[in-house]
Length: 242
Ligand code: URA
Image (cartoon, rainbow, N blue to C red; front, side, top):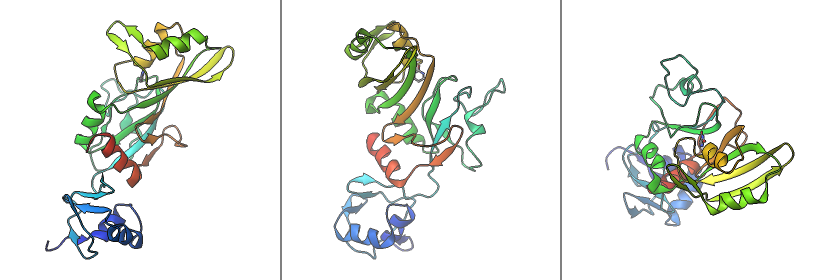
């Protein structure tokens, strides 16, 4: 290809590894470009359009494709603009030139992890039930949590719009009068966690999302945003079947 940049430079710019370490990945045959394993360091690629994979995982080499994790505060609406003038995600999304989409929604009263990106395809896939991306929530409920509640949630609960099956459910802290439970599930019906816990007589007073697929909230402070790492982006692509 005339023009373009060297493969190891594209990998280094994408944040995969240093240029030296990227050369090693190439030499080891772990890098493919547009479906072909490339072992030559000099190979030139177009970072905007080449499909570059490391160990089969797609790498974001286009510098204008952006991915962020935001720790949404309670009271913020999960839209980029609100006709009623309430605080929205765009108040926290910083000064990017690009138009960002939010991946799914959280209730206004729910806090925690929401992904923002200008990659419409990834955003759509991550919210599609087909890809079964698991989300993790931590909920404050009345404590101590009776064993029957744990059993009932794990078994599956019937809601008015159909059954809900969790991927996992555990009690994290079992105090009186409040307990913390962790719920992992791969669906996104409206108010699903609140409705689920309500159905087993353990109404949620506080709810936070701590993880979406491979991306965790970690120590991200409420109301702040960080760029995802190259690895997290690759793992999201994989989770979304890309
Ligand atoms: N479940 C809820 O009830 N609320 C959310 O915001 C997310 C999942």
